[in-house]
Image 1 (cartoon, rainbow, N blue to C red):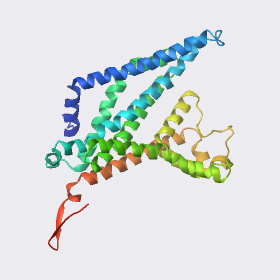
Image 2 (cartoon, one colour; image 1 turned 120 degrees about the vertical axis):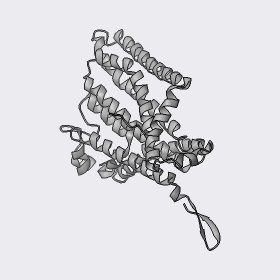
Image 3 (tube, rainbow, N blue to C red; image 1 turned 135 degrees about the vertical axis):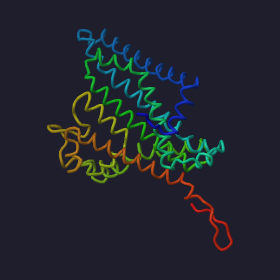
Image 4 (tube, helix red, strand yellow; image 1 turned 90 degrees about the horizontal axis):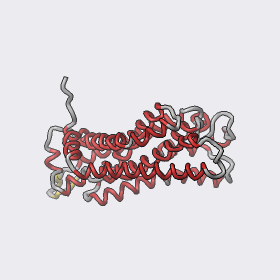
Length: 304
């Protein structure tokens, strides 16, 4: 049975893998991971000759996983908006946007194809870094299922970052403007989502956080912190049974969502929903029916 690829995905991947820039970017990606790996090894070696010299040095190799994983998360979160921000605006700058719209593909298929092509490209980077990541599991004693779940979280982050980039690219005519707008949205989601929590804590003089913490379900940074807490300790970031947190501290819904892995899965669903919303709005903006020129009372107007 022949698999019918999205033409956008097929074209973007063919152009990408044939360029030397992609090969050099893979090399740079692995170089950053290797540097992080050597840095952790030097810290472990330094601790083995100090106060913890009598302890088992191999027990510290488990910390290779969060360090290497966080390095990959930062790289993906930074480079994906830069890549996708030129997806639509770059077509406008090259004056090929109108030609792309004359194809049989719907605006949603075009936008979704751009997002999928970036996600597949990120999977190439993740696969290239697997040999370095595997050392944390071979020596550190972590379960291989954690590596599988980490790949799923990287895919989730790639979809979210790509949707933000494609959203900004559909509204901007210049790629640099789309990149700036992408990081502005990053700032709103990653940083300003803590503002209601901080204001509520100040209002209650730090007695409880209330349900304002539910806004953090849409924050990918908090999601990854919860993920690493679950993998490394099996505990929730917001407190589990037997912890110092109570219903009065974090609110009824937040307390019960923090039991087990409920918060992590619900946060992943919220981030996917937010990503889908960005994609839908980008497809609406790309649709030529929403930006056509109409005539009323003899005057030309542009419908937004």
